[in-house]
Structures are given as C-alpha cells and as structure tokens.
Length: 332
Image (cartoon, rainbow, N blue to C red; front, side, top):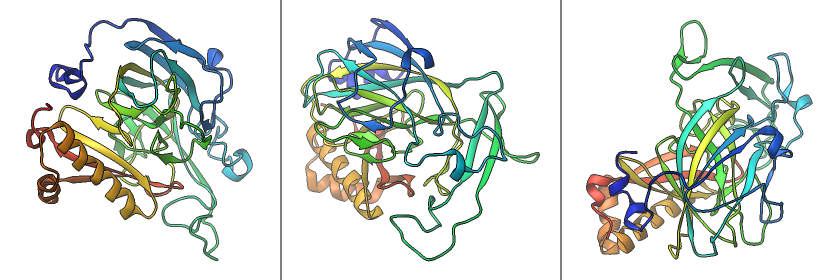
C-alpha cells in the first residue's frame, strides 16, 4: 500500500505499521454464519484497532449449490443468502467514530476452487421480482459452475476467460437499533456489491453502536457493473483485512479510497436517489475535508465526477460516486 502515507486515514492520524495483532476466523471458529446485520449477535472476536483478521468466507449460498444440476429454488431458503463472518467487536469504537478497513487480500479457497452463478426465480435485473411485480413467468433456473484461479482467471468457457478481480460483496457495521437482512445495502454498508471494495482499497464505515460490530462476506471473483442477473461469480475465500479506527470522524454512509480516487456510496430506490445520495456525500466530503466551497464542488463534479453502479438487483440499489485524487487535492 505504497500510497498510504498520503491517504486520508493517514491524514486523520491512523499510523500504519506492523499489525498490532493477528486473528483468524475459520469455518470452525465462526460456527454459525449470520444473515442479519445488527448488534444482537455475540461477537466472535474482540480486537484492538490495527488488528489484522483473516476470515474463511462462504459463497453466497453457504455451499448449498454443489452441481449444475441443482435447482436454486429447491436448494436455497430465501432470504438466507449472503452468509456473514463476524460480528467483530472493535475495542474503543463508539457511535460517531469510523472504521477504516484496509482490504489486504482475497484468495479463493478449496482443493479445487470453483465459482458459482445462477438464475433463480424472481431475482435479477431483467425479470419480475417481489419489488417489481409483473405477471411475466420466471426465467428457467440455471446453475453455472466455473473454475477460479488467481493467476489464470475465471474460465467461462473454452473461448472466454475473465480476469480474477475479487472484491467483498457485503461488508458493514451494525445499525444502532435495527436488525437488517444481509441482502440489503444501506447507510451501514451491507450488500453493496461494489467492485471497488477490492484488495488495496480502504473502505470507511460509520460506527453506529459501541464496538462497531463488523460483518463481512459474499466475496465475488468477478462481476460487471450492476450485477445484472443478480448473482456474480460467488466463491468461498480467505479474505484478510486490517481494521483501524478514526475517532470522532462521523460519516453518514460508507466511503472508499484507493490509489486513484475517493468514492462515496449511496444505496436507495429508485436508482437516481442512490446516485443523488452518493454525490451529495462526495460534495460534503470535499467541502469538509478538502477545502472546497460546497457549490463550487457541486459544479466541479458535474464536469469530472464518475459513477459506478454496484447493484441494480438488491432491495436497494447501490451507486458509488468518485473523483480522482489529482482533482480533489490533499486533505486538510
């Protein structure tokens, strides 16, 4: 992470050095994976800021779809999708603080690493769903199993191999009072399906309750913008993150930083409200921490802002709004 010395978190006083502690969450130590974000499950770890944590994540189906002959409607118990590791209690975290989660690595696990994507009833961007109710018949169910390899990529067929571009599909902190399905993205993070939540990025998450209660899971080997059919290349991984704490930096929704840009995240329906929310928070970030006048930032982003569509299939849609660091300048 060569750019860290100039990162926003460094400017906020988070000194990156050697990991203060190392922790591993295995399937055995995790025990029951969680399908709800909330501060009501017993934490499986309590860590100090600076801790490095590796987690054995499941795929989005907790391994229930084993072959291409399986029918999702028979194997899955909707909405029990997106199993989450955690919760992880971060010592010293209090409401109004911010977790800075540096994603160090995501690697596939298993003796023969495989990814899975499916078509399942009433789920996807171009089909009737519970939220978009139509009389149209569901598409035929289909399961596709794919070989996943860090070096050679994701083998779609004999002609097409996609690059291995892993990211964390679902990550966030607990809401203060609600218990919310791990299928839902919102102000705390959750199922954003944003491909920029990838190795060498830092995602900033609001702390809504004491200890933060960090959850993560649902890692993808590849995904296009929008996650069109509703299911990316889902795969089990060993995902390693370093968790830091920025005291007193209060943010409304998740933010992200990598070597090239700053991003803010909005999740809502309709999609334009997700974009509005993301851009509003980016304008406010530029005004608060980069010395911009708010109206000038609004006008500037009209010319150079960029939008990334995370998902258009979940109960709320996710959009990331970003600006290049070369334009934003140096944080104050």
